[in-house]
Amino acid sequence: MEGKVGLGLRRDIAEEILDSRILTPDFLEFAPENWMGMGGAWKRVMDKAVDRFPITCHGLSLSLGSPEELDWQFIRELKSFLDENRVTIYSEHLSYTKSRNAHLYDLLPIPFRQDAIDHVVDRIRRVQDLLERPLAIENVSYYTPVAAEMTEVQFVNEIVERADCKLLLDVNNVYVNAFNHRYDAKEFIGALPLERVAYIHMAGHEQVEPDLIIDTHGQPIIDPVYELFEWTIQKMDPVPVLLERDFNFEDLEQIQGELTQIKGILNRHWEVTHASA
Amino acid sequence: MHLRKETITIQERLGEYCRTGVELELPGVTPGRIHHYRRLISNVVNDTLHTAFPITVAALGGNQWELLVQDFFADGIPKTPQVWKLPLEFYQYHTGRETGKRIGKPFLDDLLYFEWMEIEIHTMPDRPFPDFVTEGDLFNDRLVFNPEHEIIQLSFPVHTHPVRKAIDLEGEHYALLYRMPESGHVQFLDLSALNIYIITRLQEEKVTLNEIKNEIARVAGIESGRYLDEALQKFLGDLMERKLIFGFIQN
Image (cartoon, rainbow over all chains, first blue to last red; front, top):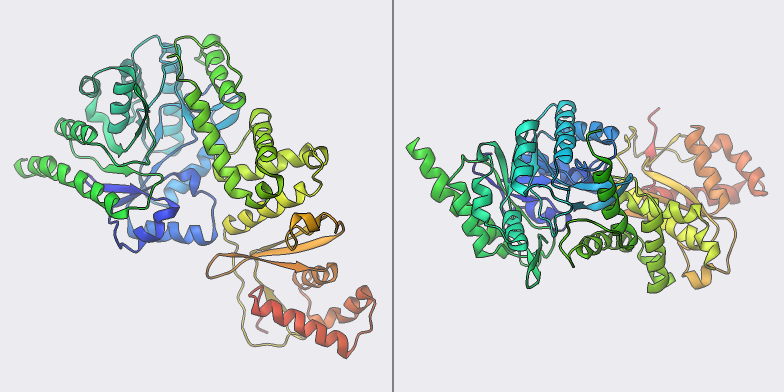
């Protein structure tokens, strides 16, 4: 999987991907919550995808950062799903999606605080124990810090280090956060434990205000994000890279073009590294 | 628990704001940014429910529908980690609170139920298909039904009539929803109570049609004879064509 380029399996493009007409990713990523417990036509699509492609999973609802107890029943079902579908990498967001036991279905920012680090570290360790596999934690995009007592990079680094987990480095999220919170994206990435990165996400975004970008996964990747990506991968060993696209599927050639462009960047650097190794 | 009470309160306040829109004091936030979280979350919930219940949205009209969604999200506690199952919780929330009665739309429960059941049948886990043969005798062999079906009872025939007409037809109505084996598409049949009785008996009791023919005549209040045989032949033959009956158990 190292150096391979994947795409999220969305219902709108499932048939297209499985028929390999225009889109030709090397692997597919599922959001397990969108497929677990499903039968019928969608189960058949999923089975076909698992037969034909290596699979990674990117979770949505674990809610690692929320105060209430983890949903162990859900995590047990998740483990079965990951095992049954031969999932190679399972990742989740460093955020919370539940409050007072109500699911919110989007990613809220955890306060960058020491007690939150202790809480999240403990939860990641317990989840990894039950799943019997490492978790890759994604740096999320956020639109405002909330009650922060340290920097984002301090927060991320201590969690990853102490939980002894992997990192899903979302390059677009770093770009979005650096823009929204006025910090240096390269400095941020340079301070991360890049040896722990197991997986990279790339995506498009939308600038909604002069000083605010929203991480939409609905637009093409912009050049500065490609540049940040190229700069980043030269500092680390090869890992799988995923293009996230959640909607706006009208122009499949353009999406395939993004896959090709990512692959071209990888080949410029990671193949050279392999050849000289 | 490692979290300080203050951190928990801050996290819960942000969650509450996203659900209710009521602003609470949050330290260390960038002005003018928090509302994006409520907007993004509302988009997910609105899109999910709107897609699940298109007939209900049309029947209620935009404003009333939006109020139902707002009530649910502010007051209900969405428990499912799988957002595609949220429509079930929406249906249960409003049925539990008798919202339909309260807003003068008595058909609401039925409409939400029917629309949810279409999703449920489409997505439910696969049920094992029994062995069967396609050649057999409708009256003397035991029949094999498509296991991927559910029978629902409705007070208003919202599955067969526009709401404006269904509202005048309150009574006992039945629909059978099933999944087509090859395509996975959901089909439904409007059935009488007698039809439902026959299907239920044939499936659950594992009897042949001939063994319960007299019983059917008694329930229907008609004589067992040629007329009934022809009606049963037509009814069950139709179910076979529609792939609700797969075939026969091999003797």
